[in-house]
Length: 277
Image 1: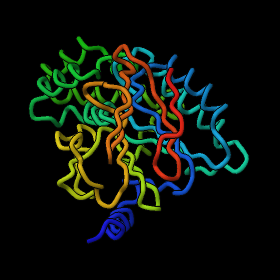
Image 2: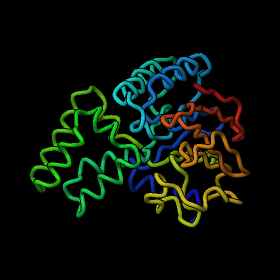
Image 3: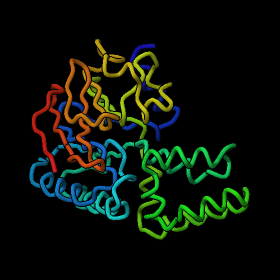
Image 4: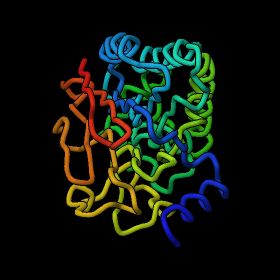
């Protein structure tokens, strides 16, 4: 199956998995944010000036986690979206949000009672930054540890309360429900992901590679599935803007002591402008 046929079949079978962007125009890609509200707000202020009619915006995941302003970060995403789509000529699908590793962990956390080893799963998630999100939505680390010891019913009540707490913040649950696994342009030029992909798998079979990446991504030596460039917003090493023949990484370490990066890609796939906050 060729690249176009594969993408068509995948989106038709599950239209919530991938977002399709218009090719031939400018696309702004925002790297992993990780709860850094002040950096995101500053970046949005610059985007509001730099964005032109016809531009599209793709957020590359990791809105939650690490930084301590998780609630404010999600609120800022929603506020900027309202302002952006209110502009003349902007369509609802001109702004896209991808699911990041933090959002994937959050969804798994809300089902922690079904894990065969919840204590181990929770420990792994905490090591990867989920603790600040738990605290932001009113969960307690000591409380969940107690619930794990008390059994599945206590843990179910804890995760149900977390869900309810999130629903109390207008738009937060809705945003989490519309996150895409990846986005691509309709001209077969650009593919946007959170943490990369596994070059040995087709687009429809990436599974967790979208969120955790693959060791083979950095060495991608030829176009993947016909795309000229694959763009990712998260890199475990947080090395900033790294460009290769067929890949681009934008993670400058937001939430980990570094800055937040946005890149504007032109119709030919080249970076036209970089913003940092």
